[in-house]
Structures are given as structure tokens and as C-alpha cells.
Length: 103
Image 1 (cartoon, rainbow, N blue to C red):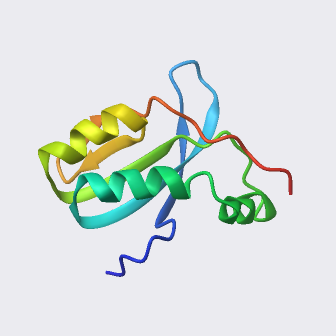
Image 2: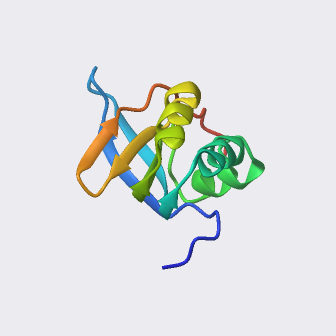
């Protein structure tokens, strides 16, 4: 499994008010607070323009998945707002969205 900072999963989801959105998820084996912070920063990069060129429109709720999640990672996720996913399911729902980019 590569852990290179790229988007690992783009999943269609419905938000609580029924909007169809594309959730973007970073996947890592061991999830620490730095990985959460780094993912938060990458979400605002120009690289997300590729999603628009692929026909996916925002906003994009972000998520981060870890097989092993340390306590500080969970605290950092609460602060920055990505959804936190583990092998046991969703621990935190996303509380932030990344705006879409024009194609």
C-alpha cells in the first residue's frame, strides 16, 4: 500500500441534508497528528483541480483513514475537520468542506 500523500479514495456520499457530494480520503497505516495536519494543508492545494478536470465538482468533504490512529491524531482531526475513519468505521464525521474548483 503506497502512502505518498495522494488522494487514495474518492467516494460519492450524501450529506445530512441530502446533497450528493464526493468525499476525498487519504489512507495511511499509522495515523498521527502530523498526517492529519499535512492532509488538511494538501486539501487546499492546486492539485485538487484534477478532480474538476475529471468531472467531479465540489464541495468535497475530506476524510482520513488509518488502521492505527493515535489519540493526538483524533484531537487534530477534531480541530481541522476531516472525517476520521478506522477499520471499525467512522469515528468522526467531517465538519469541513473543500470548495470545488472550476474545470
